[in-house]
Image (cartoon, rainbow, N blue to C red):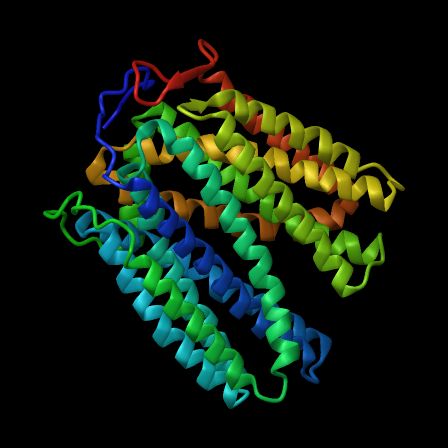
Amino acid sequence: MNTGTGAQLVETKKPILGWMRGFWFLMGTQFQNAFSDNALKNLVILLVLAQPRSEGERDTLVSLAGALFSFPFILFSMLGGWLADRFSKQCVMVGVKGAEIGIMLFAAFALFFHHTALQLGAVFLMGCHSALFGPSKYAVLPEILPLERLSWGNGILELLTFSGILLGTVAGGFLASSFRENLGFAGVVLTLIALFGLGMARQIPRVPAANPACGMRINPFTDLWREIVRMRLDGELWRANLGNVGFFFIAALVQMNLVLFAHDILQLNETRNALLSAALAVGIGIGSLAAGMLSRGKIEYRMVLAGAGTMFLSAMWMGVNGVSLFLFVTHLVLLGVGAGCFIVPLTAVLQHRPAPELKGATQGAASVMSFVGILAASGLQRVLRMVMTSEKIFSLCGCMALLIGAYIFWGRRDSFAGKINGESVS
């Protein structure tokens, strides 16, 4: 493992023969994963909203759906990291995608019988599925790609992830309206999509197990603490991890505040409200792709600072009282662009810095901590709403982004960029 400030990189590797084909099958699998997750979750939420319930019961069930999908990432991401280290990451992804077919068949059963509790159970199982899938997905990238293409690959990955989230959310609404009288067919459609995902996962290159002698890790809390201690020995890895947590904390806070701002201040209906979230997702996808292409062959820390600065300026404009809808949407997209530039270099650091046999464990720990950040944002949102307006919350998010970006960049202030496969990293 690289230690200290990480100025020297000793890891070298030859790219897998035909890596481009395997990379695009991995991207297709990830797109399908993000699409299916959000299609099922949004479908269940819309079905809950359509039922004759009290407002309090409705809001509780909607919040429960989000929590049931998120909580498995805290419980099972470390297990996913162990699987990624202990076995071939491709085999893990194929196994998880196979399990998704069973989950979607269960969802089809729950939808056919209009059973809300079972539908929420299916959402929970998809959260478990994605928690186990995530570490292998991220940790396999450095094993498939030539090192100089790692930032580029992460840009594509983030673009397709947010595209999948966006289209999956829209698809959930389409399934809810198109199969209102025959909801079981919606589950069948999701099952067929899962079958397609399994077929793509089988085409990902089968890399060897990174650490086949790794002992089983089943306690998520002690495993997480061990990984935190290990990451703190590598200052660069630790800063990237904190930046990753900060990104998801701010993203969750912005997204929750955006829904309330659109309803209370802009007075938009549900469809136009959802389009604002879509605009943010599009911006993140564009920023991720741009960062990946501009950082080709490098881990480009200037992108972190540029992204943080863009987020700060955009959020400050969004926080102006009486801002027009056009200007608000424009700066919302720019906020997403800044966020994409911010996260791509940090993701590349988290993938590249750990030793090969520890990449899965690192990704598992990073996933757990990012969802802790999301849950913390949920709690803070309630408190902030008591003491400041929605506009000021946007401004606060921009200030936090700038501070986090400055902290990360300050740790590498002696240089600006370094080659992944060369002598130095900045």
